[in-house]
Length: 85
Image 1 (cartoon, rainbow, N blue to C red):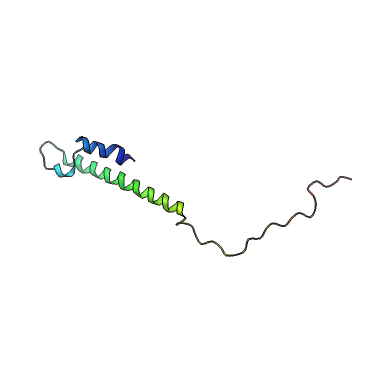
Image 2 (spheres, rainbow, N blue to C red):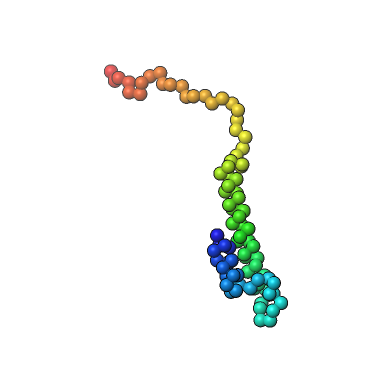
């Protein structure tokens, strides 16, 4: 969300300089490369988290379940409140 809501509008407004203008006078190439890296990490990291959440929701990370039958608990033979003599 950070990449799409903050960084992309800053590129569109011209506040952050794209990599294509790295050779222009007065532009610090280190800052351009660092902001480009931040944008790549933020946007691709967001898609990675979205994909992992989708995969976890779909059950792709679950382990194989045991095929052993599940035994129901045995019912009590005596009542919970026994009479006191």
